[in-house]
Length: 132
Ligand code: C2G
Image 1 (cartoon, rainbow, N blue to C red):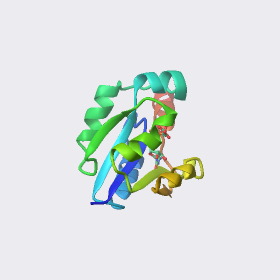
Image 2: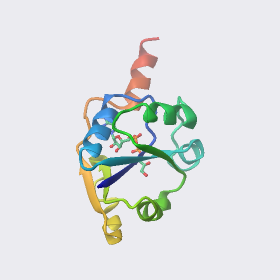
Image 3: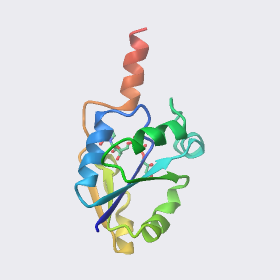
């Protein structure tokens, strides 16, 4: 069984996220999603989510491509996650290209997938604000 992991905030879930998860799952047989906690988002990623962690987690768990959701609470946990979950492939959108190549030292394949260009959570928020 080939095990894949990816990380993110996944707020205001949209088809760009879904396409990323679908392609990540296609790289293996089992997909773990490390979901940024509210604390990690607020204090370290400086992202203020519309949906709290438990709701973002429930949304991800409803997606057919996702097998397990775990919390992401620090930038440094990736090495431990790869060991603990026996991960073969680490996947991120290519806005992160190069940032996680060090994980190859853990014997893990690192794959950056093209982002879906025309959508983002911040654009959704901005468009909705402009429509008010
Ligand atoms: N994504 C995408 N296309 C979009 C928007 C997002 O492919 N239009 C991808 C991102 O590249 C990322 C994933 O969807 O791989 C989740 O996106 P975010 O929730 O914005 O995640 P991010 O804040 O980049 O968190 O430790 C890593 C961080 O937690 C990554």
